[in-house]
Image 1 (cartoon, protein in one colour):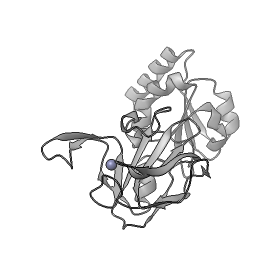
Image 2: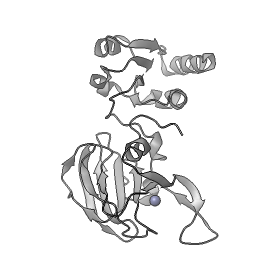
Image 3: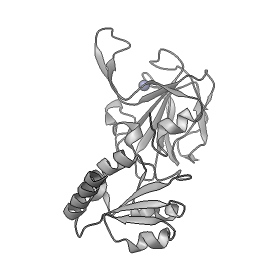
Image 4: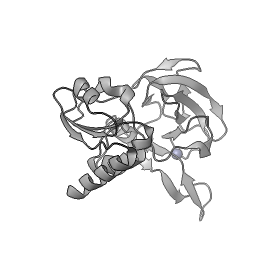
Length: 233
Ligand SMILES: [Zn+2]
């Protein structure tokens, strides 16, 4: 399986974890014969007590025990999304703490409703707190604005409205997507697809990069250019 840059699965597999249960429908482990919808990704394959590192920088908004989640740490990122790390054996941060990507927040455990030691990782939409049904979607489809070392290819949007237009290109190129607030991180990227908005600020931020300009005069024209480019690949 090819993994995207900065996405949580790559982050955790590089630390020796493996997916023990993917995002999406699955047989309900607690109710045989029934189907459950798994709202996050389970990472296992490492023993109880293994450090759990945060995938993202942000503010800790939750660090306590819940009946289902067990010991859960929640981190709100700069875009307001809540990153949940559940079933921890212990928690090393408290609400109000700031963490950076890669900081240790706890240890692998099996607290709460868990069949064995693993990390349940889930990303919740802004305002949904720790609610299990507040999930954004597959965590590997979330785009992180951090962790861009060794990135060859990136997409830059004009604005939020371009996100869905650019999604098929992102899936095809398997690359991170950046908003205009993150241009400072593009300096080392060699190929940049501009999907919306002016090209000049991108050239200024990444003078050595090859720029592929797929921006139209509005989001509909941008969508058409992206679509035509995909067909040409
Ligand atoms: Zn899970």
